[in-house]
Length: 165
Image (cartoon, rainbow, N blue to C red; front, side, top):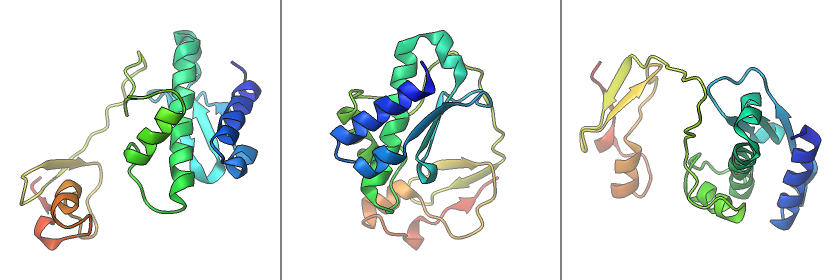
């Protein structure tokens, strides 16, 4: 599918959702540098990038990935600068509105896997959940699920992550 056609489809979908300002700015392009990811959304540029390998998997996968990435832009636009989970409640609502209810956060497409070493491990003192990271945590961080469940979403020192590896 051509970039212009995909951009026009996105703009039309955004108009239907009442997001005219985003519709005027949204752009879609193929990015040959994408290898293991199917697509990416760049909210500040109102840009969606798609992996050209999607074209080999059929129009259904291209369409689904386009809608998935557009849902990110919709959710962030509606959040108006507030932080939201990338695949959280707002994103899932946008997916439903864009015709992909039950969309998964991760694709299961036959694209090359990108294995990133995560040498740093941290643990929550409350739930004992292990969190593996690419980089060291530089400032105090707490277990997000525990903070959400027991502190109303606010940082709580009781759930501060400690390094185990």
